[in-house]
Length: 278
Image (cartoon, rainbow, N blue to C red; front, side, top):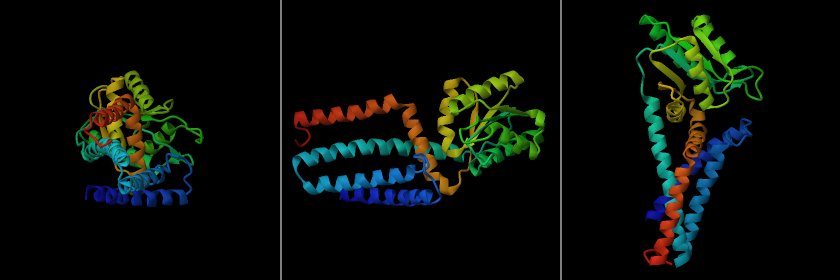
């Protein structure tokens, strides 16, 4: 019964991932990050097939290997569920207070203009900015994002233009155009805020899937800020959350490698002591 449930769960997870990955490929996606749902779907499907084959063989060796596969896969699944729960919880929290400074993180341009995902971040920034102004504050806004290899200008420039065009005074918008990743976004933006003499409550705006890693990175860089999540387009949710999960795994890579190694060691001890079939 347990193995049947595992097989059904693998199929239930793999099919939507594969469908999303095929759609991404049809839309012209070619990079691994954009096809991550397809890769993940194939991996989950392969896991289901491996579990079924090992269970069908039924030897003591296949049974021992099956236990190891289930333990390793179970650990990764548990970590993903914890990450997903934290990301969804943080992304759903509505920050209603005002801010003295806002940092909006870039995430790529489309033909030199803001992408739908970036527009979501900017619109959330505008929401907080205008709420803060209505409360009598004049928040500084930092548009943070460098220039990608396939971009003809910095994300910061495009973001600043978008904000100014929608009512943010140009003198309150500061451009941070050097960063290439989240850590640099926060570190360089902190320098911009310091140079601008901005103090008080700081809010960092990103997409909901990115909130957890941004908050962890902010703590590491010493930036005292709350992180606010903006909605992610439905078709981008699977690949966005998978990319972010992979990034969080890498961020704590040694911890997870140690946990996986411990599982293998315990499995080996179980075989040697007879606690597991051998």
